[in-house]
Image: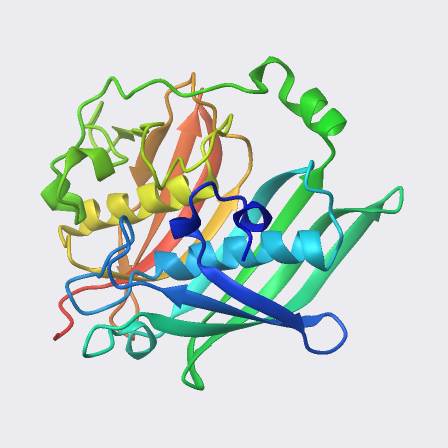
Length: 294
């Protein structure tokens, strides 16, 4: 799959392998999840990282926007809402070690036109692996022309992040091995941590962007939940993300977590909030499974 169609610079970061139309506004896509991905590696040596599913949804929606909805390559995209849930068995690693070959069945849920051009769209996703369900997801996005994007962003068009000035939390507390992969800084107040971003990161910042991406915020929500639960090897099994405003580089973004709630299935649910200049710019409600037997 051409990397430009999924807005990736590195060929190694392209997860989608192909696509075809099935009927009407339904499509089938292929994706491959490596167990040795450079950032979204195996969780507790037991599961594929479900964030690979989130990234597969993102890439698939971009691909279909360009190829099926004919959105020009020059347009900018903004994800306003995305979600996924996975089954633990569906993301379990293959033995011996092989990548997971996943089929994504996607249906166009909502599309709006402005002056004859697509301005927003949504897709519902069902992921299958060897005929068995892996999980479900949804994404709603907006697409705007370069002229509209310039009006929206003003002098922030082309903004670039600087290297992080804050120290990271202990990587071991958020399931990471090194500070480079941590997206949370040490507490600035009780329960309040700054978002920590490094524009040199080859995966999280695979290509230049002028604001913090949704994938970075979802990773920050996962790390915040792992920290709050004191369970660095827990498996993220669901995420419901809402992005209300662009998250800017030049303003500190503060991250907080509500108290966790445990459901009847044994999953721990938390809502993670992102604030800039006193305003909530986004939130992620996440569910994790802890203490699962490997």
